[in-house]
Image 1: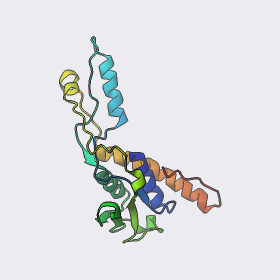
Image 2: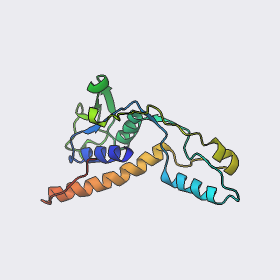
Image 3: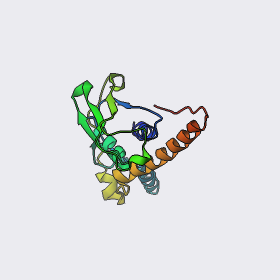
Length: 177
C-alpha cells in the first residue's frame, strides 16, 4: 500500500493520474524500512543459538498519516473533508506551483473506494521489537519520514520520466496499483 500511495501521488503531481483511491485510512500500521529489517535478519543469523524475534519498529501511523507525509514531501499539503466513504483529500496549497502545472489549490486528489477495504480488516498492526533490542541491541535507524522521502524521490523521478515521454508522443503505461 505504501508504494501505491507514493507512486500515485507522484503520478498525480505530474498529471499522469487524477486521484489516489484508497481503502481504510484509519488503519494503524507499523511501517519500517527494508534496510533496517535486513540488518536485523543478519544480526539474528550471527547468534550461536537460534531464537525468534519480532522485526518491527514498535511505532504506528495511520494510512492517512502516511498519505499526508508523502503529499507534504511533494510540496502538496492536504486537508480532509467529509466522513467515512465520502471523505476526500484536498490540496490546500502548492508549495512550488510551477512544478505542478496540472494541479490547483482546492483540487481533490484522494478519495475513499470501498473496493480497497479488506473483508477481514485488521485495524491495528504493531510489532514489539523489545527482545531484539535487549538481546541484540537492534533498533530501527531509518525513520518513517526518511523512508517516505526516499520512496517519494524515487517515484517522483519515475513519474517525471513518464510525463516527459508522454509529452513527446510516446505511449506510457503508468502503473496505478
